[in-house]
Length: 586
Ligand code: ASP
Image (tube, rainbow, N blue to C red):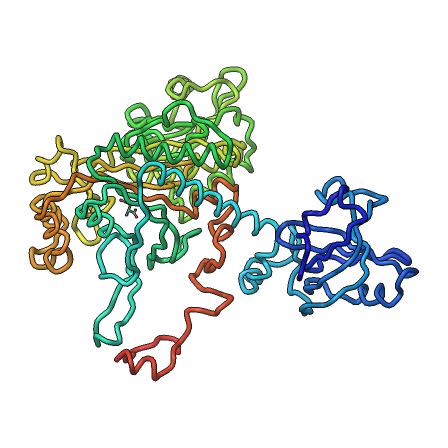
C-alpha cells in the first residue's frame, strides 16, 4: 500500500496512529538536530519530523532529499509543539520511522511555490511542473467544477450531450480553418471545426430538441492577445424556441454558475442593451458596465469655432473622468500617448479641466470660450473637479479609440475590480457587416443567423440595415458567449448565401447538405455557445485564459513543451502526397 492517508487527512484525533504517506518533497528545513520536511500531494501538505538523536542515519537521509522527489514515509502521528494555524494539518506532524524514495527529482528549473521565480515561457516548457503549483491546481479544479455545474444545469433542463466529429469539411465561419490532409484521399483535406455549428443544427433537424456539448473548437486566427488556436465552448442548441426562450434558458445557466461557483445570486433579469445603444454609449459591442463614464457627443456643439481638427471630424465625442480635474501635465501627456498608440489609433486628445471655482482650463482654450466649455460641461453633467476627455475623427474609429480610453480610465480609477461582476445581454446585432477590403458583406455572426422578420424585406434593398435575432452574453467587458435564432428555411438560407456573395454553385458545394436537410422538415431552432476558457478565467480572476487550460499554447500558438508545430518526416509527407513549393526561412 503506497499510502494510508493523503497529505491533507491527518488531524489531532489521529495522534499516536501509525500512518504511511506518499508525495512530493516541497521543502526540507534543518534546525540543529531536527529536520522538517513538508510533504505535498494534490490534497495538501503534512509536516514530517526527523530527529538526529532518534535515528541519525534516517535523519541524514532526509536531509539529502532533493525537493520534488517522490517519497513514501511511514511513521507515527504526534501533536506539534509549535502549531501552524494556516495549514489544515498544522496541529500534527508525522514522526518518520522509514523513508523510501519512489522517484528522485532532478533540481526543478523553477520553484514550485505559489509565487514562483519561473517566467511564463519556462513554466510552459515544464508545464507538468507548473501544474504542481497551487494556483494552477486551483484553476483546473475551478474549471472542473464549472464544467460539472454546467452539465448538471443543462442535464436538468433536458439537454443531451452529443459528440460531433472533429474531422469535418471546411466551412466559412469568419476565421481560417486548420486543415488535415487525407492520406486515403490524395489531394483532399478535412478541416477542424471552428465550432460544431452545422452539426448542432442538423441535430435539431434530426429531432433531438435540446443539445449541448463541452467541445474543443479550432480557429487559425492571426495571433491576438489572449487567444488560443484551440479552445473550449459550451455549445448549445434548442428547437421550437424564439430569442426570448433562448435568452431565458442561458441566463438560467449563467445564474446557476454564478450561484454554484461564486455564491452570487441574481434575482433580477440581466440588463439588455441593443448593439446600437452599446456602440453609442460605450463604442464597444461588449461594454464593461461595472462603471458608467458613458460617451457624450459634442459633434453639433463643438464644430464651427475655428478648431480645424474638430471642424473636419465626423464625430466629436468624449467621456467625463469624474474627480480627475487635478490630473497633472504628465498624467495628461501619458493619456495622450495612450490614445496615440497604434492599437488605439487616435491622433490626439483634447481635455477640459473643470476647476473648483467653476472656471475651465482646456487644451483648446484658443478656440473655445468659457461659455462654450460651460455648455460642454453641462452636456457631460460635469461637476467642479471633473476632467473631460474628448476625441474627434471618423465615426467608427473614434468610438473604438474612446472605448479604449474609457477602459484605461476605468483601470486607473479602480473601477474594474475582478471580484465584481456585471453581466449584460447585447441584442439586435446587425445581420451583415460591410467589408471595405473585399467590397462585400460578411455575416456578422455566421451565415446561418436569421434576419429579424420585420427587417427581412430590406435584404434585397438595403442589406446593411437588416438586424438579426443575434445576441451576446457579456461579463465585465468580455464576450462570454453568443448565438442567434437560425434560418430553417432552405430558400431563405439560399438567399442569405447569395447576399454573402456565394454563387448558387458555391453554396451548393459547401452547404448543399444543410439546405437539403431543411427540405425534410426542419424545426425552428436557435442556440448559443459560450467561451468556457474565458468564463473560467473571469470567475477565477486570472489574467489569461492560458492560466485555466491544462496544456496551453504560448501567444504565438506554439506548444513549448512538445515543441509543436514541428516538421514531419519526408515519408509522412510522401504518404500524404504533399510537396512544398516554397518554405521561406528553411
Ligand atoms: N457557433 C457560434 C460561435 O461559435 C455560436 C452559435 O451561434 O451558437 O460563435
